[in-house]
Amino acid sequence: MNSALITGGSSGIGYGLSEKFASEGYRLLWVSKPKNELAKAKEEILVKYPNLEIHTIAKDLSVEQSCKEVLDWANTFGDVDVLVNNAGFGTYGYVNDIAIDREIAMINLNVKAVYLLSRLFLKGMVERNSGTIINISSNSSFETIPRLLTYSSTKAFVKHFSRGLNEELKMQNSKVKVITICPAAIVDTNFKKNGKMEKVKTFEGLVATTTEEVVGDIWGAFTKGKSFQISGWKMRWMYKFNAFIPFRLRMWLTEDETSEI
Image (tube, rainbow, N blue to C red; front, side, top):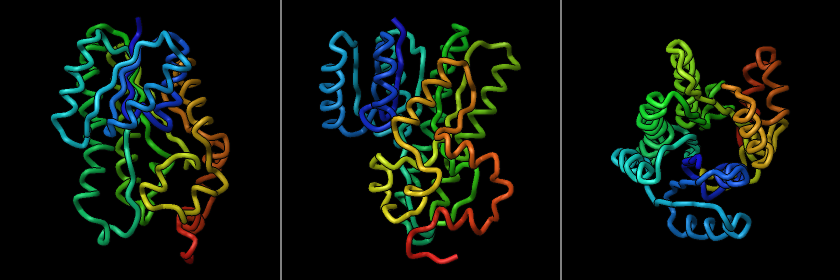
């Protein structure tokens, strides 16, 4: 039985993608921080897929040793064929106004955990010469965004690291693939609420997308063997013309409703 380990699997993109893997007979391994959310989501998905084998573990991946603990836990169920680094959160505001501890926790989760989990699970995949790592970046990785500065910087790391790692594997003639996903702003998740971004224009803007569309794009990239996917058809369209859009207009599209150009 193939296994898919999904961080943040109990909600949002992670849950939607879990349903895709479940429908194909994969074993699911979920890593999320909230225990109650894990338990509730597990009950829900088992109603839809009663024969699903699913295992969960509550871990705060912003704590470094958690990544090695996840590896040891996952290995008790056999090889992991697909690793999805989906867990993450954002902060919003001027850098000098945001609590440093909050931003460090975000950097540890969005960057350090993605790096460590990729490295830890990559070893076994390379030895078996099979496997896929799916890393969730963001459309914000293409632009420096004031008041989303640290978050967009973490997602820029994910994009550069993931695309470069995939190229390194190609150079080594490895069959292991790293897929980089860059979703547009998603309107129907708790991301903007948790990050206090309710008034940020991008979530209601021209290129906003939905969880369903993002999940479909990720699954399409995975099943079609793509290594890079911008998620959201409007964002893909906009990306083609990004170089021709004035910088100040791009900044305005990410500001809150009270901001001025």
